[in-house]
Image (cartoon, rainbow, N blue to C red):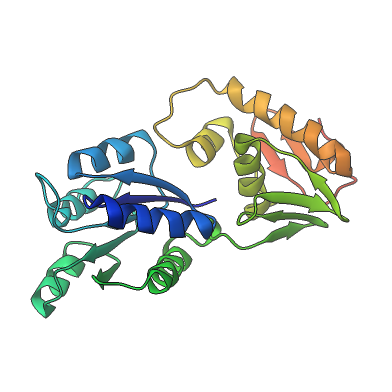
Length: 233
Protein backbone atom coordinates (compact mmCIF):
# COMPACT_ATOMS: atom_id res chain seq x y z
CA UNK A 1 0.00 0.00 0.00
CA UNK A 2 1.48 3.35 -1.06
CA UNK A 3 1.96 5.99 1.63
CA UNK A 4 0.79 9.46 0.56
CA UNK A 5 1.54 12.58 2.61
CA UNK A 6 -0.97 15.38 1.97
CA UNK A 7 0.33 18.82 3.00
CA UNK A 8 -2.67 21.15 3.01
CA UNK A 9 -3.69 23.78 5.59
CA UNK A 10 -7.36 23.99 4.53
CA UNK A 11 -8.97 21.17 6.54
CA UNK A 12 -11.96 20.70 4.21
CA UNK A 13 -9.71 20.22 1.17
CA UNK A 14 -7.34 17.97 3.11
CA UNK A 15 -10.23 15.77 4.27
CA UNK A 16 -11.69 15.58 0.73
CA UNK A 17 -8.33 14.44 -0.65
CA UNK A 18 -7.83 12.00 2.23
CA UNK A 19 -11.22 10.33 1.79
CA UNK A 20 -10.72 9.85 -1.94
CA UNK A 21 -7.16 8.55 -1.58
CA UNK A 22 -8.12 6.08 1.14
CA UNK A 23 -11.08 4.90 -0.95
CA UNK A 24 -8.60 4.29 -3.80
CA UNK A 25 -6.46 2.11 -1.52
CA UNK A 26 -3.75 4.53 -0.41
CA UNK A 27 -2.45 5.04 3.12
CA UNK A 28 -2.78 8.75 3.92
CA UNK A 29 -1.10 11.08 6.42
CA UNK A 30 -2.13 14.74 6.74
CA UNK A 31 0.04 17.73 7.62
CA UNK A 32 -1.21 21.31 7.94
CA UNK A 33 2.11 23.14 7.71
CA UNK A 34 5.61 22.80 6.31
CA UNK A 35 6.97 22.05 9.80
CA UNK A 36 4.46 19.23 10.31
CA UNK A 37 5.24 17.89 6.84
CA UNK A 38 8.96 17.82 7.60
CA UNK A 39 8.29 15.95 10.86
CA UNK A 40 6.26 13.33 8.98
CA UNK A 41 8.96 12.94 6.32
CA UNK A 42 11.60 12.62 9.04
CA UNK A 43 9.50 9.93 10.74
CA UNK A 44 8.68 7.81 7.69
CA UNK A 45 9.57 8.61 4.09
CA UNK A 46 6.30 8.53 2.10
CA UNK A 47 5.93 7.18 -1.43
CA UNK A 48 4.60 10.54 -2.66
CA UNK A 49 3.71 14.01 -1.33
CA UNK A 50 0.75 16.15 -2.41
CA UNK A 51 2.00 19.62 -1.51
CA UNK A 52 0.17 22.95 -1.27
CA UNK A 53 2.15 26.11 -2.08
CA UNK A 54 0.55 28.50 0.43
CA UNK A 55 1.24 27.13 3.91
CA UNK A 56 1.67 28.69 7.37
CA UNK A 57 5.31 29.66 7.89
CA UNK A 58 7.51 28.16 5.21
CA UNK A 59 5.92 27.83 1.75
CA UNK A 60 5.44 24.57 -0.09
CA UNK A 61 7.76 25.88 -2.79
CA UNK A 62 10.59 26.39 -0.29
CA UNK A 63 9.89 22.95 1.21
CA UNK A 64 10.11 21.29 -2.21
CA UNK A 65 13.48 22.99 -2.82
CA UNK A 66 14.66 21.85 0.61
CA UNK A 67 13.72 18.24 -0.11
CA UNK A 68 15.41 18.27 -3.50
CA UNK A 69 18.59 19.52 -1.89
CA UNK A 70 18.78 16.76 0.74
CA UNK A 71 20.23 13.34 -0.10
CA UNK A 72 17.48 11.41 1.69
CA UNK A 73 14.58 13.21 -0.04
CA UNK A 74 16.03 14.24 -3.40
CA UNK A 75 14.05 11.49 -5.19
CA UNK A 76 10.84 11.97 -3.16
CA UNK A 77 7.91 12.28 -5.63
CA UNK A 78 6.05 15.59 -5.18
CA UNK A 79 2.85 16.86 -6.77
CA UNK A 80 2.08 20.53 -6.11
CA UNK A 81 -1.63 21.22 -5.63
CA UNK A 82 -2.25 24.96 -5.41
CA UNK A 83 -4.51 27.85 -6.35
CA UNK A 84 -1.58 29.61 -8.00
CA UNK A 85 -2.40 29.06 -11.67
CA UNK A 86 -0.18 31.54 -13.54
CA UNK A 87 2.33 30.09 -15.98
CA UNK A 88 5.20 31.67 -14.05
CA UNK A 89 3.97 29.92 -10.87
CA UNK A 90 3.83 26.56 -12.64
CA UNK A 91 7.35 27.06 -13.96
CA UNK A 92 8.58 28.01 -10.47
CA UNK A 93 6.93 24.93 -8.95
CA UNK A 94 8.40 22.55 -11.49
CA UNK A 95 11.82 24.24 -11.29
CA UNK A 96 11.70 23.81 -7.51
CA UNK A 97 11.52 20.06 -8.04
CA UNK A 98 7.82 19.19 -8.27
CA UNK A 99 7.15 16.17 -10.48
CA UNK A 100 3.71 17.52 -11.43
CA UNK A 101 1.63 20.66 -10.86
CA UNK A 102 -2.17 20.72 -10.46
CA UNK A 103 -4.24 23.86 -9.85
CA UNK A 104 -7.32 24.39 -7.68
CA UNK A 105 -10.20 23.88 -8.14
CA UNK A 106 -9.31 20.35 -9.13
CA UNK A 107 -10.92 17.04 -10.00
CA UNK A 108 -10.18 14.27 -7.49
CA UNK A 109 -10.19 11.78 -10.37
CA UNK A 110 -7.50 13.82 -12.14
CA UNK A 111 -5.47 14.03 -8.92
CA UNK A 112 -5.65 10.24 -8.52
CA UNK A 113 -4.61 9.76 -12.14
CA UNK A 114 -1.64 12.09 -11.72
CA UNK A 115 -0.58 10.37 -8.50
CA UNK A 116 -0.61 6.99 -10.24
CA UNK A 117 1.28 8.42 -13.21
CA UNK A 118 4.03 9.86 -10.99
CA UNK A 119 4.28 6.62 -9.01
CA UNK A 120 4.62 4.67 -12.25
CA UNK A 121 7.55 6.84 -13.24
CA UNK A 122 9.23 7.20 -9.87
CA UNK A 123 8.35 4.06 -7.87
CA UNK A 124 6.61 1.41 -9.97
CA UNK A 125 6.67 -1.13 -7.13
CA UNK A 126 4.51 1.20 -5.01
CA UNK A 127 1.50 1.00 -7.33
CA UNK A 128 -1.66 -0.47 -5.87
CA UNK A 129 -2.41 -3.03 -8.57
CA UNK A 130 -3.12 -6.68 -7.81
CA UNK A 131 0.05 -8.78 -7.51
CA UNK A 132 0.09 -12.53 -8.15
CA UNK A 133 2.94 -14.98 -7.58
CA UNK A 134 2.52 -18.75 -7.99
CA UNK A 135 -1.25 -18.48 -7.54
CA UNK A 136 -0.99 -16.32 -4.41
CA UNK A 137 -2.89 -13.08 -5.03
CA UNK A 138 -2.58 -9.81 -3.12
CA UNK A 139 -4.90 -6.86 -3.73
CA UNK A 140 -3.66 -3.64 -2.05
CA UNK A 141 -6.93 -1.86 -2.81
CA UNK A 142 -9.09 -4.28 -0.84
CA UNK A 143 -6.25 -5.54 1.41
CA UNK A 144 -7.12 -9.14 0.54
CA UNK A 145 -4.71 -12.04 0.12
CA UNK A 146 -5.94 -15.34 -1.28
CA UNK A 147 -5.02 -18.49 -3.15
CA UNK A 148 -7.43 -20.75 -5.00
CA UNK A 149 -10.36 -18.92 -3.44
CA UNK A 150 -9.06 -19.31 0.14
CA UNK A 151 -8.49 -16.01 1.93
CA UNK A 152 -5.47 -15.38 4.16
CA UNK A 153 -5.91 -13.11 7.17
CA UNK A 154 -2.90 -10.83 7.76
CA UNK A 155 -2.11 -7.99 10.13
CA UNK A 156 -1.09 -4.60 8.64
CA UNK A 157 2.66 -5.19 9.01
CA UNK A 158 2.52 -8.72 7.60
CA UNK A 159 0.44 -7.39 4.69
CA UNK A 160 3.04 -4.72 3.84
CA UNK A 161 5.84 -7.26 4.24
CA UNK A 162 4.17 -9.72 1.88
CA UNK A 163 3.42 -6.95 -0.62
CA UNK A 164 7.08 -5.97 -0.67
CA UNK A 165 8.21 -9.59 -1.08
CA UNK A 166 5.71 -10.23 -3.90
CA UNK A 167 6.73 -7.10 -5.82
CA UNK A 168 10.41 -8.09 -5.47
CA UNK A 169 10.38 -11.87 -5.95
CA UNK A 170 13.57 -13.97 -6.00
CA UNK A 171 15.63 -11.13 -4.53
CA UNK A 172 17.41 -11.48 -1.19
CA UNK A 173 16.65 -8.65 1.26
CA UNK A 174 18.60 -8.09 4.45
CA UNK A 175 16.77 -7.33 7.68
CA UNK A 176 17.94 -3.71 7.56
CA UNK A 177 16.66 -3.36 3.98
CA UNK A 178 13.28 -4.75 5.01
CA UNK A 179 13.11 -2.33 7.94
CA UNK A 180 13.78 0.59 5.57
CA UNK A 181 11.33 -0.47 2.87
CA UNK A 182 8.49 -1.93 4.94
CA UNK A 183 8.64 -0.09 8.27
CA UNK A 184 10.20 3.15 7.02
CA UNK A 185 13.78 4.33 7.09
CA UNK A 186 13.36 6.41 10.26
CA UNK A 187 11.62 3.77 12.37
CA UNK A 188 14.10 2.70 15.02
CA UNK A 189 13.37 -0.89 15.98
CA UNK A 190 15.59 -3.91 16.34
CA UNK A 191 16.33 -6.06 13.30
CA UNK A 192 15.07 -9.18 15.10
CA UNK A 193 11.59 -7.61 14.87
CA UNK A 194 11.72 -8.60 11.19
CA UNK A 195 12.14 -12.25 12.20
CA UNK A 196 9.01 -12.07 14.37
CA UNK A 197 6.87 -10.71 11.55
CA UNK A 198 8.29 -13.15 8.98
CA UNK A 199 7.36 -15.97 11.38
CA UNK A 200 3.80 -14.61 11.68
CA UNK A 201 3.59 -14.22 7.90
CA UNK A 202 4.66 -17.82 7.35
CA UNK A 203 2.15 -19.05 9.90
CA UNK A 204 -0.66 -17.19 8.11
CA UNK A 205 0.44 -18.52 4.70
CA UNK A 206 0.32 -22.11 5.97
CA UNK A 207 -3.45 -21.91 5.41
CA UNK A 208 -2.85 -21.86 1.64
CA UNK A 209 0.34 -23.97 1.59
CA UNK A 210 2.53 -20.97 0.72
CA UNK A 211 4.65 -20.65 3.87
CA UNK A 212 7.68 -22.14 2.10
CA UNK A 213 7.64 -19.32 -0.44
CA UNK A 214 9.32 -17.15 2.21
CA UNK A 215 12.89 -18.46 2.36
CA UNK A 216 15.59 -17.70 4.89
CA UNK A 217 18.95 -17.09 3.21
CA UNK A 218 21.44 -17.75 5.99
CA UNK A 219 23.70 -14.83 6.73
CA UNK A 220 21.88 -12.61 4.22
CA UNK A 221 18.17 -12.22 4.99
CA UNK A 222 14.95 -13.34 3.33
CA UNK A 223 13.50 -13.77 -0.14
CA UNK A 224 10.23 -14.81 -1.71
CA UNK A 225 10.63 -17.68 -4.13
CA UNK A 226 8.15 -18.45 -6.88
CA UNK A 227 8.70 -22.16 -6.30
CA UNK A 228 6.25 -23.23 -3.60
CA UNK A 229 7.96 -26.57 -3.23
CA UNK A 230 11.17 -24.94 -2.02
CA UNK A 231 12.13 -25.82 1.55
CA UNK A 232 12.27 -22.90 3.98
CA UNK A 233 15.19 -22.78 6.35
